[in-house]
Length: 204
Image 1 (cartoon, rainbow, N blue to C red):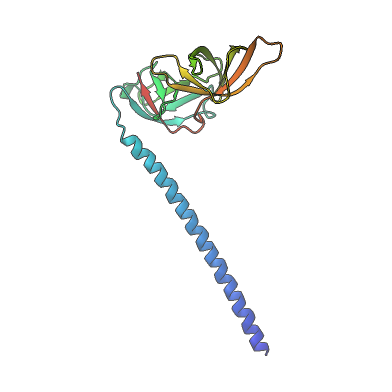
Image 2: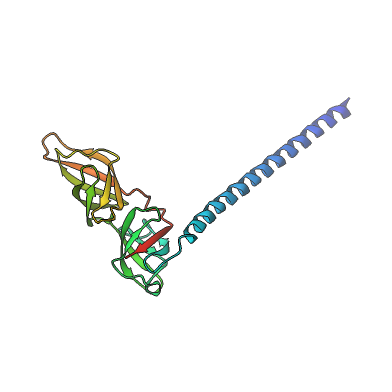
C-alpha cells in the first residue's frame, strides 16, 4: 500500500516537472517567434526603402540620434557632405510629412533641425480655409499657433507647408480660448513620433 502511495507521488512529481519544462519550452519558442517577427518587420522596412533608391535629388538616411538624446529637437543622420548633403535641404519621411531642414554637415553625418525646435517659426497653412499661419516650435514634436477667434479650427485639422508641395507638417490636437480673449491658442503636433524616427529622406 505504502509503495503504491509512494509511486503515485513520484509519478505526480514527475508530471509536474515535465509540465514545467514544457511551459518553459513554449515560452522560449514564443519569444523566438516574436523576435523573428520583429526582425522580419525591420527587414521589410529596409526592403521597402531599398526599393526607393537614392537619387541626386533624394537621399535616404538612417537616423543615428534623435530626441531626447539630442537637445532642441535635433536629429543626427548618417549621411553628410560625402553624400552631397548640404545645409538647408529639406528632411521628410518616405510617406510625406516634412520634419525640418539640414542645419550642419560633416563628411559622414549631418544635423537636422526639426521645425518643432523651441522658438522656431515656420510659415504654414491651415488646410481648412487655406489660412496662412505661423507654427511656433514648442519642442518634442509640438507647435503652437495663435488664430483670431472667428477662424474655424477643429481638432484633427491638418497644417500644411506653405510651398507648392503642401507637405503635411502637423495635426491640430487642442484648441482653447478664454471668453475675453480675441485670439484662440491652438496646440498642434507632428504626425510622427520624433523620438522613434529610424529613416528620413533628404531633398533639395
